[in-house]
Length: 429
Image (cartoon, rainbow, N blue to C red; front, side):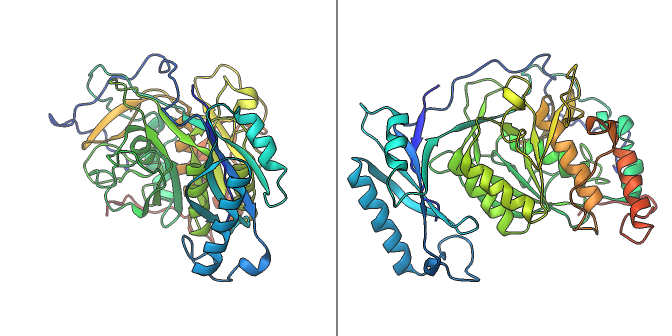
């Protein structure tokens, strides 16, 4: 894996079966996790540098994006970044990215080939104009599919285990905004079209074609129900934000790895928080990161439920699953679970895929997606329902009991909230 340096200055209702058309060729579920792969090709000498700005640079009520202060203050911040780069023998890569939620501008800078990343980060971090500097870290999603073709399964794991059709009599997640921070989603897929309130790409200089992982995660959460096609999402009434922060590295197989980096994830998280997502799904894992930690803390402070995939191969399950306030979700097939970790269906999960297809997928990525959908059900009509307390096989953690979770929420609100039984209905739009 090549290391990347970056300097960031912060600135249906389930049907009885799944429709399998000749043109919608499913893939057979993989029997084991995808093979290890190297990280995507990146410049090995990029670093992130965070600049903390004085209060007068803020403009209350400014929108997200380029309006973090006026053009003069943005130019002034860039001049500071250029001076820092020159002082430390670095070159500035592109413009800065403002993140007013945490009072920082984020800049990418490139170091000479002969300088170790850690040494550059340490030197730049001691500059009084810099809040901190860090390597541009790489993250990887936690799911895959196989390349062999088999007919789709006639039912989803949640159809029986979670009593999905019964759950949809009480709630569909109607109107709950769920941010899917992932690879490029096929927003016009027949089982997903009309489910999105945002479609943003935070990955620069990479192909923009729809990708498998993000499309699959979106389908598990909110594929349309009652439309006579494919599958039913856990929360078919939810409104998705398609936030591309990851990219698929095509190695010629159906289980091509998908990667993200610190800056792309930070951009997507900032957008999700700023645009009032109620649930953020992070089906990925990687090293601890200060920038992402601060953004997750802001999300928690704003009563946003953050769900992440648990990776048993990483210390404490990897980041961000190990972060306080994050709902960590492991594969249900995992033999043992640490305290505080939940598990949900992860094997042979039919879901949406690019090209108007449905495939079988596996991995804790999709376990996390199931829980994000469940939280959307619980939060329907109750945006203040935070933190969401899941009913599971252990006092804190274990196998999630989705039906009991929803019914308990009905008891808590005494029938006064949106979670009241209703007859079968289509949620297709």
